[in-house]
Image (cartoon, rainbow, N blue to C red; front, side, top):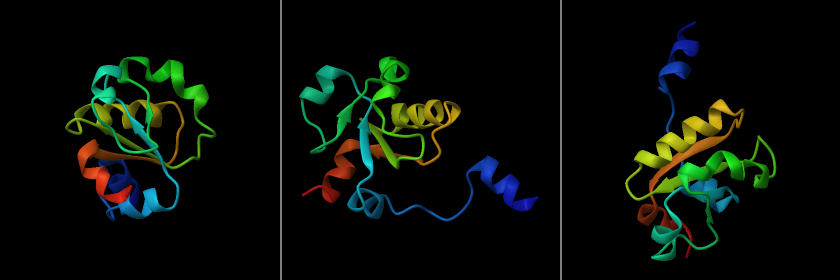
Length: 105
């Protein structure tokens, strides 16, 4: 019961985003196409938040590890929620895309 409550509230061990990326996680940038064109993480995909649902068919499987990112972490948090509600099981909010640059050299 306590674990179920922790899962609902998102309380638990922190995920190592760098490790997820090193192991091949899909980096999904949910900024606009213009923002993405201005700079992005190497090998990331751009699915703007307002077009996210129409792009989910391009994701290999609902179990694929996905790290969402945007400019500040707000839209990527929304994208994580949207994907989770669509049945994607391994989605993580990476926050600002610039913070993920350190993992993709």
